[in-house]
Image 1 (cartoon, rainbow, N blue to C red):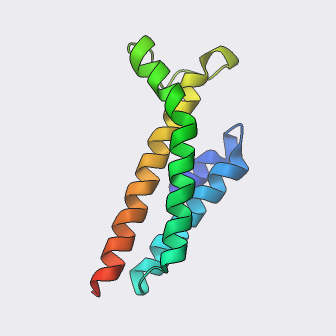
Image 2 (cartoon, rainbow, N blue to C red):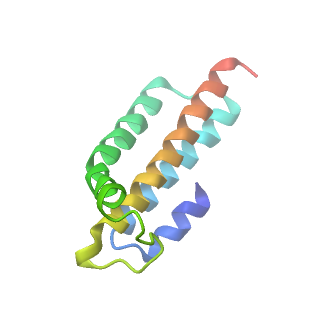
Length: 109
C-alpha cells in the first residue's frame, strides 16, 4: 500500500488516493501487532465501498463498450473510463488488504 501511495503523487487527485492508501497501510500495520479496532475497519471499508460505487460506472463503460482499449494508455477528458477503472482496481486491492489484515488480526496470532 505504501508503494501504491507513492505512485499517486502524479495523479490528478493525489490527496485523495495518497490518503486512502496510507490509511490502509496504517491499518495493516496496526493489525500486524494487535486487533484492528472495529471502527477503523468499518470506516475504511465504508470509504472503499463508496469509492467503488463511484468508480464502477467508468469501469463498466470500459468492460462493456471498450474491451480492447488499453488501461495503460494516457488518460484524457474523453477517456475517463481509464482513470475510473484504475481507481476501482486499486480500491479492490486496498479492500482485499484491509479485509485480510482485519481477519488475521482477529485470529489472535
